[in-house]
Length: 116
Length: 115
Image (cartoon, rainbow over all chains, first blue to last red; front, side):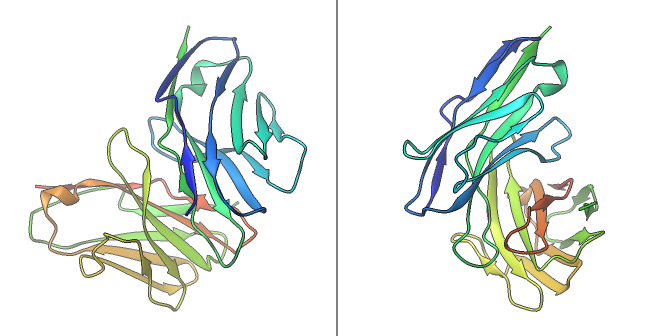
């Protein structure tokens, strides 16, 4: 079974600075999807960024980018120019592509605080 | 597009009663819906996978007779917590997907409090 590990329970960053959240995963599959989700205090899950394993190019979405290292099974999220609204729980998630509609496997999350 | 709703957003029920939570995909047909449970300051724990017209597949340790899941149409899945107890108090989140190669879209969640 696949597992996702987020080793940083809490992180903090100064407003306008850059922060990197770590995520590692374990799988024997060669094709899969990786995601970062944001969960603000409202608890609505918001997709931040998605990476397809067969794509070597790292995904970017405005201030959010990932460093995807397939061989190392590492998938970190970089948030540039941090804003107060970035404060939230961030979950790394894995999804298999083997068959059917497979569920997401989540890490335990990293709580990000942004300091004004 | 790709909106998923949940109703109710918050429900309080008495111990021993049953409560139903609805999950609807508003602008797409969801072949599969997933139900998660989230305790405070913890991650999402998958409870079951629900395919339209089929019986739900429950994760190990989830009581299927207690958490009844029905996915009767391509836009609606329901989770019924039967004979609720205070330990069932939690945040329940559903997600839905139109298909294997599509995103999973999350509902806003339902806070259940059992007194």
